[in-house]
Amino acid sequence: MSIVHDPTSWETWFHQRVTPLVDPAYLELSHAVSTRLEALRIGAELDEGLQRDRWDIFAPFPIKSAERVRTKLLADGECDEALLVDRVLGLGDLARFRIVATLKRDVKICRRALVSLDHKTFLDRYRILSLKDFVRDEKLRKPLVGHRAVQLVVEVPSDAHAVRVEVQIMTQLQHAWDRRNHAMYEWLRENCERAVEEVDDLRIDDHAVAESLHAIDALADHNYATFLRLRSCP
Image (cartoon, rainbow, N blue to C red; front, side, top):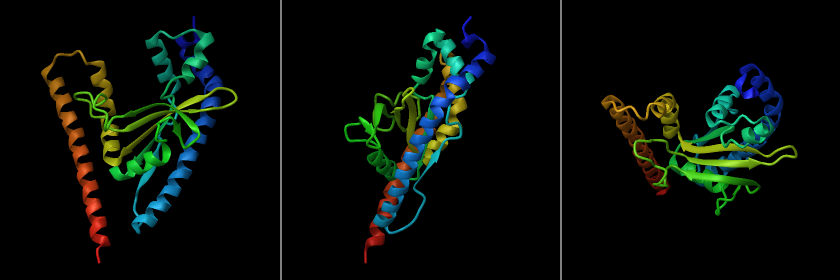
Protein backbone atom coordinates (compact mmCIF):
# COMPACT_ATOMS: atom_id res chain seq x y z
CA MET A 1 0.00 0.00 0.00
CA SER A 2 1.32 3.44 -0.94
CA ILE A 3 2.04 5.96 1.81
CA VAL A 4 -0.56 8.18 0.14
CA HIS A 5 -3.23 5.84 1.54
CA ASP A 6 -1.94 6.18 5.10
CA PRO A 7 -2.57 9.69 6.51
CA THR A 8 -0.01 9.37 9.30
CA SER A 9 2.81 8.07 7.10
CA TRP A 10 1.94 10.64 4.47
CA GLU A 11 2.11 13.53 6.94
CA THR A 12 5.58 12.44 8.06
CA TRP A 13 6.80 11.92 4.49
CA PHE A 14 5.44 15.30 3.37
CA HIS A 15 7.17 17.27 6.10
CA GLN A 16 10.44 15.39 5.61
CA ARG A 17 10.60 15.42 1.81
CA VAL A 18 8.48 18.34 0.59
CA THR A 19 8.43 21.11 3.20
CA PRO A 20 12.26 21.55 3.29
CA LEU A 21 12.19 22.17 -0.47
CA VAL A 22 9.13 24.41 -0.63
CA ASP A 23 9.76 26.70 2.35
CA PRO A 24 13.01 28.26 1.04
CA ALA A 25 11.57 28.75 -2.45
CA TYR A 26 8.45 30.44 -1.11
CA LEU A 27 10.44 32.72 1.20
CA GLU A 28 12.85 33.65 -1.59
CA LEU A 29 10.10 34.63 -4.01
CA SER A 30 7.86 36.43 -1.51
CA HIS A 31 10.84 38.43 -0.20
CA ALA A 32 11.86 39.40 -3.73
CA VAL A 33 8.31 40.55 -4.47
CA SER A 34 8.08 42.52 -1.21
CA THR A 35 11.33 44.30 -2.04
CA ARG A 36 10.14 45.22 -5.53
CA LEU A 37 6.73 46.40 -4.26
CA GLU A 38 8.37 48.66 -1.68
CA ALA A 39 10.44 50.30 -4.41
CA LEU A 40 7.28 50.65 -6.50
CA ARG A 41 5.44 52.28 -3.60
CA ILE A 42 8.14 54.90 -3.18
CA GLY A 43 8.13 55.64 -6.90
CA ALA A 44 4.33 55.86 -7.09
CA GLU A 45 4.21 58.25 -4.13
CA LEU A 46 6.71 60.51 -5.86
CA ASP A 47 4.71 60.40 -9.11
CA GLU A 48 1.37 61.15 -7.44
CA GLY A 49 2.73 63.36 -4.71
CA LEU A 50 0.75 61.65 -1.97
CA GLN A 51 0.81 58.65 0.32
CA ARG A 52 -1.94 56.01 0.34
CA ASP A 53 -2.49 52.28 0.67
CA ARG A 54 -1.47 50.60 -2.58
CA TRP A 55 -0.88 46.88 -2.10
CA ASP A 56 -0.16 44.18 0.44
CA ILE A 57 0.90 40.55 0.29
CA PHE A 58 -1.73 38.16 1.65
CA ALA A 59 -0.67 34.61 2.50
CA PRO A 60 -2.53 33.08 5.48
CA PHE A 61 -1.70 29.53 4.32
CA PRO A 62 1.36 29.85 2.06
CA ILE A 63 1.83 26.10 1.59
CA LYS A 64 -0.97 23.68 0.81
CA SER A 65 -1.54 21.28 3.70
CA ALA A 66 -0.29 17.71 3.50
CA GLU A 67 -3.85 16.42 3.75
CA ARG A 68 -5.13 18.56 0.87
CA VAL A 69 -2.24 17.38 -1.30
CA ARG A 70 -2.97 13.77 -0.33
CA THR A 71 -6.65 14.19 -1.23
CA LYS A 72 -5.72 15.56 -4.65
CA LEU A 73 -3.27 12.74 -5.35
CA LEU A 74 -5.87 10.13 -4.41
CA ALA A 75 -8.47 11.80 -6.61
CA ASP A 76 -6.02 11.84 -9.52
CA GLY A 77 -4.90 8.25 -8.87
CA GLU A 78 -1.29 9.37 -8.37
CA CYS A 79 0.20 6.95 -5.83
CA ASP A 80 3.51 5.78 -7.34
CA GLU A 81 6.02 6.43 -4.55
CA ALA A 82 8.94 6.68 -6.98
CA LEU A 83 7.29 9.71 -8.61
CA LEU A 84 5.75 11.36 -5.55
CA VAL A 85 8.29 14.15 -5.05
CA ASP A 86 8.12 15.19 -8.71
CA ARG A 87 4.32 14.95 -8.70
CA VAL A 88 3.86 17.01 -5.53
CA LEU A 89 6.41 19.67 -6.46
CA GLY A 90 4.78 19.85 -9.88
CA LEU A 91 1.54 21.17 -8.39
CA GLY A 92 1.06 24.74 -9.55
CA ASP A 93 -0.55 25.87 -6.31
CA LEU A 94 1.53 23.93 -3.77
CA ALA A 95 2.81 27.29 -2.48
CA ARG A 96 1.05 30.56 -3.11
CA PHE A 97 0.56 34.14 -2.13
CA ARG A 98 -1.64 36.99 -3.25
CA ILE A 99 -0.84 40.61 -3.99
CA VAL A 100 -3.90 42.63 -2.98
CA ALA A 101 -3.99 46.06 -4.59
CA THR A 102 -6.21 49.00 -3.67
CA LEU A 103 -7.15 50.09 -7.20
CA LYS A 104 -7.14 48.60 -10.69
CA ARG A 105 -4.33 50.99 -11.61
CA ASP A 106 -2.27 49.48 -8.79
CA VAL A 107 -2.81 46.02 -10.26
CA LYS A 108 -1.49 47.29 -13.59
CA ILE A 109 1.56 48.86 -11.92
CA CYS A 110 2.34 45.58 -10.14
CA ARG A 111 1.93 43.53 -13.27
CA ARG A 112 4.18 45.80 -15.35
CA ALA A 113 6.86 45.72 -12.65
CA LEU A 114 6.77 41.97 -12.01
CA VAL A 115 5.92 40.38 -15.37
CA SER A 116 8.00 40.75 -18.53
CA LEU A 117 6.29 42.00 -21.69
CA ASP A 118 6.56 38.58 -23.32
CA HIS A 119 5.08 36.91 -20.18
CA LYS A 120 8.11 34.62 -19.91
CA THR A 121 9.90 35.94 -16.82
CA PHE A 122 8.90 37.19 -13.38
CA LEU A 123 11.04 39.80 -11.62
CA ASP A 124 13.45 39.49 -14.55
CA ARG A 125 14.85 36.18 -13.31
CA TYR A 126 12.15 33.58 -12.58
CA ARG A 127 10.51 31.56 -15.34
CA ILE A 128 6.75 31.96 -15.75
CA LEU A 129 5.16 28.58 -16.46
CA SER A 130 1.63 29.93 -16.94
CA LEU A 131 -0.23 33.23 -16.84
CA LYS A 132 -4.01 33.51 -16.72
CA ASP A 133 -5.84 36.81 -16.78
CA PHE A 134 -9.30 36.22 -15.35
CA VAL A 135 -10.12 39.91 -15.80
CA ARG A 136 -9.39 40.41 -19.50
CA ASP A 137 -9.44 36.93 -21.05
CA GLU A 138 -13.05 36.20 -22.02
CA LYS A 139 -12.25 32.50 -22.46
CA LEU A 140 -11.39 32.28 -18.76
CA ARG A 141 -14.39 34.31 -17.63
CA LYS A 142 -16.72 31.33 -17.65
CA PRO A 143 -20.45 31.88 -17.24
CA LEU A 144 -21.44 32.16 -13.58
CA VAL A 145 -17.85 32.12 -12.30
CA GLY A 146 -16.82 35.37 -10.62
CA HIS A 147 -13.10 34.86 -9.91
CA ARG A 148 -11.16 37.90 -11.16
CA ALA A 149 -7.37 37.99 -10.88
CA VAL A 150 -4.10 37.85 -12.76
CA GLN A 151 -2.81 34.40 -11.84
CA LEU A 152 0.71 33.14 -12.49
CA VAL A 153 2.70 30.00 -11.80
CA VAL A 154 6.35 30.91 -11.25
CA GLU A 155 9.24 28.45 -11.10
CA VAL A 156 11.83 29.02 -8.38
CA PRO A 157 15.01 27.06 -9.22
CA SER A 158 17.18 25.32 -6.65
CA ASP A 159 19.98 22.78 -6.59
CA ALA A 160 17.69 20.09 -5.20
CA HIS A 161 14.45 20.58 -7.14
CA ALA A 162 12.65 23.47 -8.80
CA VAL A 163 9.52 24.58 -6.95
CA ARG A 164 6.38 26.14 -8.40
CA VAL A 165 4.71 29.06 -6.63
CA GLU A 166 1.36 30.52 -7.56
CA VAL A 167 1.10 34.32 -7.49
CA GLN A 168 -2.23 36.12 -7.77
CA ILE A 169 -2.68 39.87 -8.30
CA MET A 170 -6.12 41.35 -7.62
CA THR A 171 -7.93 44.32 -6.15
CA GLN A 172 -9.23 44.53 -2.59
CA LEU A 173 -12.82 44.03 -3.77
CA GLN A 174 -11.86 40.99 -5.85
CA HIS A 175 -9.97 39.64 -2.85
CA ALA A 176 -12.96 40.21 -0.55
CA TRP A 177 -15.27 38.38 -2.95
CA ASP A 178 -12.85 35.49 -3.33
CA ARG A 179 -12.35 35.08 0.42
CA ARG A 180 -16.07 35.15 1.08
CA ASN A 181 -16.83 32.90 -1.86
CA HIS A 182 -14.32 30.07 -1.36
CA ALA A 183 -16.53 27.74 0.67
CA MET A 184 -19.43 28.39 -1.69
CA TYR A 185 -17.25 27.72 -4.73
CA GLU A 186 -16.07 24.38 -3.32
CA TRP A 187 -19.64 23.33 -2.57
CA LEU A 188 -20.94 24.37 -5.99
CA ARG A 189 -18.10 22.52 -7.71
CA GLU A 190 -18.98 19.32 -5.85
CA ASN A 191 -22.67 19.77 -6.64
CA CYS A 192 -22.36 21.03 -10.21
CA GLU A 193 -24.74 18.36 -11.55
CA ARG A 194 -27.56 19.15 -9.16
CA ALA A 195 -30.53 20.35 -11.19
CA VAL A 196 -32.12 22.32 -8.40
CA GLU A 197 -33.58 25.74 -9.05
CA GLU A 198 -32.12 27.23 -5.87
CA VAL A 199 -28.61 26.05 -6.83
CA ASP A 200 -28.92 27.76 -10.21
CA ASP A 201 -30.19 30.91 -8.52
CA LEU A 202 -27.22 30.81 -6.15
CA ARG A 203 -24.78 30.65 -9.05
CA ILE A 204 -26.52 33.47 -10.89
CA ASP A 205 -26.76 35.74 -7.85
CA ASP A 206 -23.16 35.12 -6.81
CA HIS A 207 -21.92 35.89 -10.30
CA ALA A 208 -23.94 39.12 -10.18
CA VAL A 209 -22.15 40.09 -6.96
CA ALA A 210 -18.75 39.53 -8.61
CA GLU A 211 -19.73 41.57 -11.67
CA SER A 212 -21.04 44.39 -9.47
CA LEU A 213 -17.75 44.56 -7.57
CA HIS A 214 -15.87 44.55 -10.88
CA ALA A 215 -17.95 47.55 -12.01
CA ILE A 216 -17.30 49.34 -8.70
CA ASP A 217 -13.56 48.77 -9.17
CA ALA A 218 -13.74 50.37 -12.61
CA LEU A 219 -15.72 53.37 -11.32
CA ALA A 220 -13.40 53.82 -8.33
CA ASP A 221 -10.39 53.81 -10.64
CA HIS A 222 -12.05 56.38 -12.90
CA ASN A 223 -12.90 58.58 -9.92
CA TYR A 224 -9.33 58.41 -8.65
CA ALA A 225 -8.02 59.47 -12.06
CA THR A 226 -10.43 62.42 -11.98
CA PHE A 227 -9.21 63.31 -8.49
CA LEU A 228 -5.58 63.31 -9.63
CA ARG A 229 -6.45 65.49 -12.61
CA LEU A 230 -8.41 68.02 -10.55
CA ARG A 231 -5.74 68.04 -7.87
CA SER A 232 -3.08 68.95 -10.40
CA CYS A 233 -5.04 71.90 -11.75
CA PRO A 234 -3.97 75.33 -10.46
